[in-house]
Length: 151
Image (cartoon, rainbow, N blue to C red; front, side, top):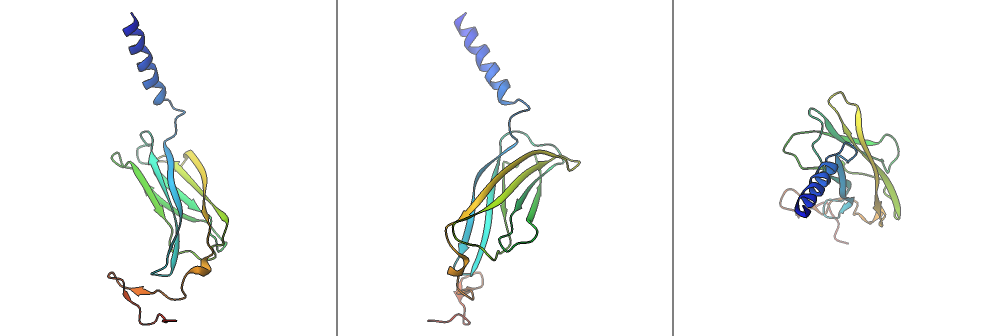
C-alpha cells in the first residue's frame, strides 16, 4: 500500500509541474558586455524554455535604450526543439555606471497575444567612457587597427 501512495504522489507532482500556471520561460542570465577590442558595448539576456511554448508563437526581448528613446526589441520564432533563446542588442551608447536597465521578455502566441511576461534588468558597474574611441583591432583575426593610437 505504501508503494502505491508514493507512486500516486509522484504522479501528482509530475502533473502539477505541467500546470497552466507554470512559466513558459525563465531568465537564466544576462548583462552588459564591454568588448574593449572592438570598442563596443551590448546588452544580452538568456531565456530558458521551462515548458512547451505555444505553436507558431514568438519569444521577444525588449531592452531599455541607455541613450534614451524607444526600447530595443528583438523577436525569435518558437520551434519545438529550441530550449534556449539568446538575445543581444546592437551596439549601445549612453551606458552609465551603477545603473540598472530594464529588460522585458515576453512569450507571444501565434496571434501575437502575450501569454507570459518576465521583467528583469541588466546592470552596469562601469561607465561606457572606459571604451577606447576607436576599435583596437579590426577584422575576424583581431588584427591591430592602424587607426588606433598607441598612447
